[in-house]
Length: 180
Image (cartoon, rainbow, N blue to C red; front, side, top):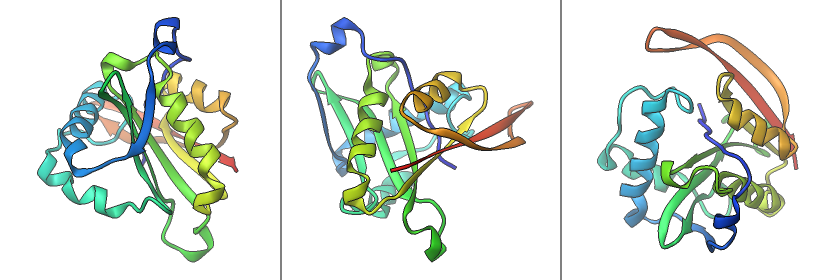
């Protein structure tokens, strides 16, 4: 499952902040994991229920290739403000042009356009990555993410009602997609 946490367009103060997107490297893992663990705690953006460690996620970078399924970080003010992955949607050959997108933002950088910037980059670079469709799996109660994806041209492609159990709450999963 991909998990997405997104926020509104950048504020005036963030517009002054230089944002740089680059491939993630192993040295970024502590920040990537810190951001992910913060998202786990919110129960808004991932079906993962327990915190993860750098060691348990070390191979995650190796599962991505910059020329097909990248793992990017966005730096702002010299810090990792967020990250995005594109991965194979399903393993069958007929889906080779489809990619699942996941994006997470550091709590301190939310509502500054980090998720939007990462998603816009993924959309614009999709053709060069041989991606023809992007799919996001977003909890239906994650309204900020659903709103952002809609603003960027994603449509609702499906709903899996009460598919996830987060603590004692059953949650719906919305499937959004966009052809690129």
